[in-house]
Image (cartoon, rainbow, N blue to C red; front, side, top):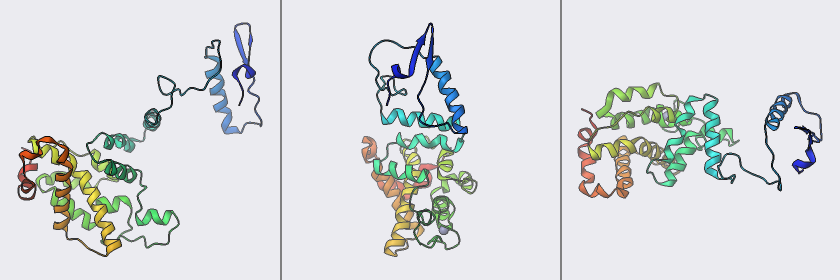
Length: 258
Ligand SMILES: [Zn+2]
């Protein structure tokens, strides 16, 4: 590590830089070096000791948040529109464990059969529910025939939206396209949590099928999803104005939009 004063000398008004590089630059680094020199020409120096600073936070101190924001900004500027929605699961009122799960699912890091193979494990790539397609994140959560049945069941009050699932290429795309919900108080709450609870329970059911050889019926999965939503709503003080029976029996009425 060197000091700035070792690398820069003042000649009149100009600063002359010699960075003492230990090797020749590769071709692809030359542009970066030019850019660095350009940046250095524009810097203003003041007296005092050299110190490290983190340029992406106002106080110069590293925080995970500032790093996250910066990475996020960078990715957006690279115009990868499918990544744009990545920010939102953190802001939802979901248990931290679920947020983390969603995050890894969005990044395609959860251990589906396809991802296990990518990591060098010798497993059968085929989806254990339908045995028709390889089990990757999109198949498991969107396009598997069993999964489709679950979504279809849940989205009966919004059947025109359900059809969009076939066009979605990833879960973030699907969740990002989630339309505005019903206007009733309970309906709004349920609608917001529905995609997250569904993805979570589908994952749990998949694990139950693989590790405990238990296959759940679509109706049972749907009840589990409703139960999960109800449980997550426990932090909402007004939940005690409603009953779980409402979710079980009046689902369509609760989620219908006028
Ligand atoms: Zn399948």
